[in-house]
Figure (tube, rainbow, N blue to C red):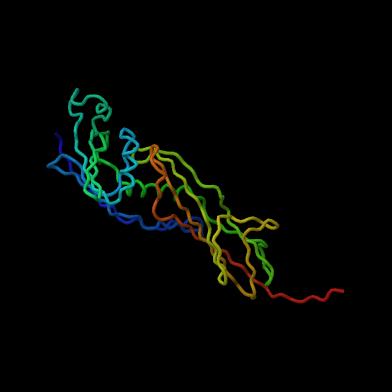
Length: 270
């Protein structure tokens, strides 16, 4: 049988993507405790952590594999398409570059489970952390830029309410696509945290204009103030009926808006 060796160490995923001139998307670190190696002696892949397995394996077993961060696993090559007729049954669907692997999962209590066999690519089984790193990149590409607005748009007066909002939708983002060879349904829910300096607010409302205002603040002093807003996108996903699985660490965006607060003056009215 053909032997193989793969070493994949997952680095922490950090970075900032600037959108527009005033928006930054921050990718919080994802867990990277998964190491996948190819074992030449056993002609298999071994590793630890949660796995995302293809639909050829029973849904219940795939759910177990996807939600077992403390597990270890091994996958043994049972068939390779090295020659015509070398594989039979569903293993023939793997193609010349694939493996027909049987996956064994060992729980933290030491019990080993035979999860079944399926076709895998040259890298072997896919860790959940590997898939979620790509999913976070997908979220960054999907979310609209964060731009704040206020009402009134010009100079405001102290002791009078200022209305705020963002040019984003309150509806969750949804997308279906394929990642690492697996069908994925992704859902990301937003919330917004406002910092007005003297007060703060966290809400699931994107903000509405007067007279239906949902986000407002009253400034007590004149001067140049700044309102800051952070959009927080938390996401879950399903993989061929398994899930929902939560992506650890939200994707965040930041923006700010300047508020010139003028002097309030008394006016004598006859």
